Length: 427
Image 1: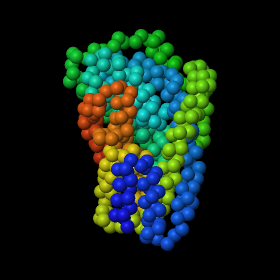
Image 2: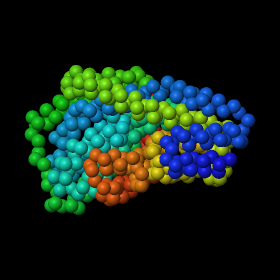
Image 3: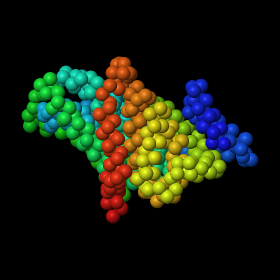
Image 4: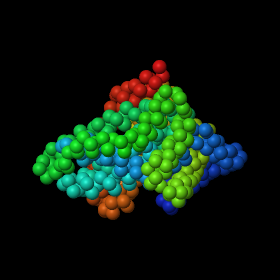
């Protein structure tokens, strides 16, 4: 049965069908040939999959991200970080890294971060003497911190699929996101020192210029503070925070900055509708597929095959991380999330692992896969935005991959990196 399902999906994928087709067809073939259940259950499960209230947050966070990506948010955040760090050794790459982290906490989208930060910072870094391969690899990988820093679309979807608190996932992602940004900054400094005199420094900003940069960045910085602070304090739920994020984005970009017009907002809404439709179709079909494999007890069979019964929690976390990483290297991370989460949820429950820790680990692997050859989605975003060939874009990614792998090991052996803030919030 498992062989039939896998072969069906692989054949349909090689025939270039969109991912929701292989998932649906595999579930239908299983129901028709291996079960005696009415195929109408597929429709019922699809509706069930998109019914959770937590999913309401997805289109709202996407809309808020699109509005801010079209406005001045990225520029003002960059201006602030550059004013305080740009003149120092490795100041510009550290500026790019911190800006990607901050913009990720505003947008929740890795691709929006690549576009918004990359288009501004790449020319500056090249002018300062940094190699283009290093610059593109930095922007691609630093943008993936957006997967970990709330609001994270990946965490919302994982929380829905695994029946895990989205609010706790948001809080737990902050620690690993900050640690990862720090590791990237350390590498940027080491790289800059190794380059020596080939790197030029930008002039130091005076006190008045720094105050002006801070004034312009206050409103964008207020976004993550209000969102995370509201969730952390229990004042708002993630869904309420998503609704507030749209209002905040509209006020900042349309009323205060006056950067966006009505047509821009309408275009952002249209783009949000298209993205949300794709996401919800995958989530609905993924629910139907996961229900079927759970009904047939396929995850339990895989549990025996992987020999995870009685295994240590560290080993189980490693297997989960490896599975998601390999999947995200070849297929869109959302598709991997929809397929693998239902398989591993019973394993996580049986092992006693904290589902929030697993959610952060899965999200980290989605980030790594999005920036890793051969088919990381952020790589192709960079190819389109920077108009550079594939091999040139991926040339400098190895050091960042090593850092991300090290971050994975840290999470496995030091789970407190993710769970400390979550446990603190519980008090």
